[in-house]
Length: 606
Image (cartoon, rainbow, N blue to C red; front, side):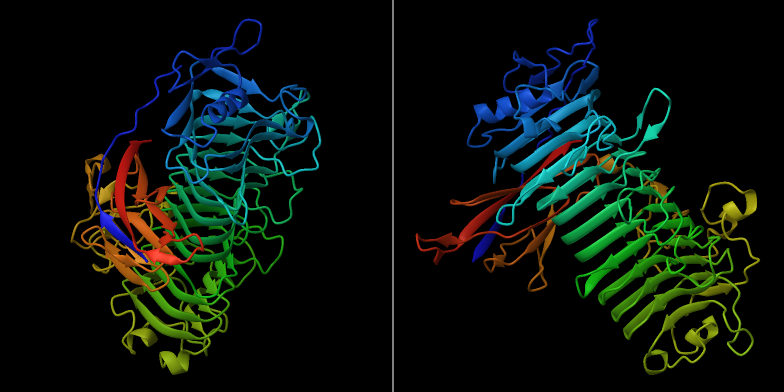
């Protein structure tokens, strides 16, 4: 058994003040320094990182930062005599170090350092914990134009093991551009940018992936993956990887993607692919320019999906295969599908019978509030589709813009919800008409609009503005119990009042997120589904998985949870962390005592 006792701390991480200057002969020297040895300088990142390992062979005893102090580019040396032959494929390698530590190594490029992998691999982290990469540019990686490799290369590669995953691998403010242009101006594109295997607790925040790779983000057996406030773009033209996607994620307790823009330029199949994830949280994201299915979800039975305040437009326009016709396609049964405050602008140019949110299986609970569904292309067969049984349906305050006809009048018109067991669940025989739902007590405040009505700014002035027309800002209001706390731009907050339906909150007030100093946390035991928070001790059965979430709303802080007892210490970064705590055991690995853990929350500036 484990026991929480709760205490709090609040520290602000120091910001590195540094500036990598190229010398006149093109050689970069002494461009890196260490926080713990301020008068020692290094001329390669590989040397610097391994020097820290040598000075702390059993793991860090305090936080250490390696900072770039000169503007310039470090290029992988294919003939580097300081590395074994097989490691010269990588610019930097660090292995078997800092496991289960509560301290971290930060590599701070300070927006001055560019790491060029010279067509192959950038940084390989193997069997290491708590590594933070900050304000680094990754270039010319994983395109193989200057050399070939039998191994999987990427700009940043993290590999753990089945019995000891890498933990706390964090990217903040980094840029990835894998394209290489030769002297004839021909471009070569990368395969992978950020690739992880058996790596737990990954945070990618404020990062830019442009012309990045066939799969910019590829994570397997990740446990918790957080992507926040990033810009992830397609531009994929290498065509050496089957089923290219912007993200390929598998094996997670939680995937949370917030405040991120996904541009699907040049993707012909799937946009983002997920397998075996227990819970999905998509909040305030923009998905656009996807030729075919934007999100595809497979694997783990009975997941939860929360799609909140997201915007979808210019999707489903150029299929390679005609069955790729979905904004989101789920192949696994779901405990819950929650659709709140989204704007879905169905303007695809592809084949008929497009669908927005489709589950090719059973759904226990479908929650559908405050969304704007627009069938701009007049090719939508169903806004929501459940190809299986639906146990419960909750819906209200939605705007549906489409051609709506009784089935006897027109065969292939738009359904609000297509479901296999309509008669037994809802008692609805005509699934195209909103009045049929309202006659059974569903969607009481929802509105079905003719397809000729203009709802969004983009429909009036041909701009790239997908906000609801201002004239409707008080006419169409959301369900007050489920409206978004913040708008999609994370600028307006709405407190205890109804807000506008859809991805944007037109009725909120501008707020300063840095004013939020909340140091509390909440948690849930995933196994027992028992909630707890910082106000009291919580008794935790050994080996149960718990999720702890910081309640701060300030995105400029990197949250660090440290859980310490008399025998064990655990550290995780992020607003949401999943972990299993240990109890006291004897030499035979038998339980002998509870462990009393204190929880400290630290906030570091990003």
